[in-house]
Length: 236
Image (cartoon, helix red, strand yellow):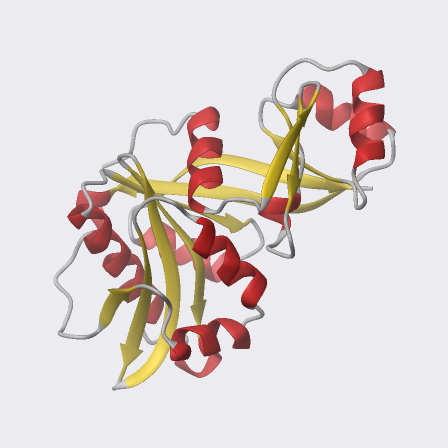
C-alpha cells in the first residue's frame, strides 16, 4: 500500500514537533532556529513564502553559521542561495508508510519501548555520534515519545527514537552497532516503531534519511516504505 502524499507543510510540521529546536524566531518570511548542538535539522533556517533579496540579506546576517533548509517548492530560494555561493550539502529523502503496513509480531524482548533512555541506549547512540545535545532534542518533545532498544542474540544491537504528532509518527536517530549490522536489528526497530505508533493511535510512520545512505534506503524500500518528499541544505 502506498501512503497518500505527505504534503511538504505537514512533513515540516511533524519534523518540528518530533525533533524540535531549542528556540525559533521569525525574521520576515524566514524562520531562524537555535539548534544548541542538536544537528542540522534543528539549526537550519527555512523560508515560508516569497522573499525579497533584502530579507534574505537580513536572514543571512542574523545567522552565526548560515545554514538553510531548502524544500522542493523553494526553487527561487535555492537559486538565490546558489548565486550567493551557498553550497548544497546532505540531500535528504523522506519515506513514509501506513503504520498498519509496518506492524509485526516480534519475539519477546526483541525490541522494547521506554522513556527516558536507558544508559545502554545512550551508549549506543554515543558510539554513533549522537550525544547529549541530541538527547536534549528528544527531551524537548511534548507529545508521546519512546526510545526503542533492539537486541540480537541477547546482545544490545540498536536504538531509535520515535514520537507522535497527532496521527503522524516519526522515527529519528536510528543507530545499529557496527558488529550487529546486517543481522536484522534495523528491521526490528522499524517494526517496533510501528507497533508503538499503533498503540498511540498513529496511522502513518515517516522518517528522513540522507540520499547517500544506500543501505538504510534499501531497507526502507524492502519494508514497503515510499519516498514522499525530499529537501537539502545549503551552507555559506
